[in-house]
Amino acid sequence: MIDGFPRCANTFAAIAFQAAQPRPVKIAHHLHAPAHLIRGARLGIPTVLLIREPVDTALSETIRSYPVQLSQILNAYCLFYETVAPYLDRIVVGEFKTVTTDFGSIIQKINIRFGTNFALFDHTPEKTKLVFELIEQREKRPAVKVIDEYLAGQTNLNEIRNVFQEMDRRMVPSMLDESLVPRPSAARLTAKVRLRSELENPQFARLLERAWSVYRALARHS
Image (cartoon, one colour):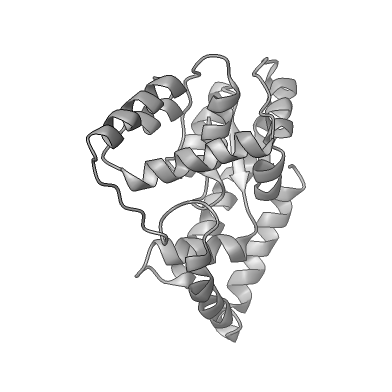
């Protein structure tokens, strides 16, 4: 199981994990629900909780979830991680920066914690490029489920390539909304600057303190 609050590298982690394995592995992912992770912990399933510092997480998710308000996102962030926190001794915590720069070390922690032998992700430019290409394809053609099947361990990279090559041959159109795609985007920078200025309002002080407190507690386990 690989899951976390939205915008915490959920898609990157799931794709990178599958890309590293010699054969598809069944993964539970992308429910973004504390109960999902708690169930995995109770069952003893190899479980990874993805975390990211609260400000960038909230800004990114507020842009994606418009018109949901920034305060609502921060509250949801706190509730999500506060609910999962009692189960940290049964799961592996993966911090955003480590997931996106050295995901192999996260898989290694899974193997040590759960006695598994999953292959490690080699964080080379080529492998990282593959992950981002699949992320973009997933957003461009959301009706095509082959990448979601790949994430769940139901198909492989060759099948993905065959599907999209056939779509390109038939010139099936694709679209990419930069406000939604879960990877770095220059198009979101202006919106993030505006939202970041909102956080300077004193009304956010207690909520931010709460969010940072739960994040720091989780990060100590990463």
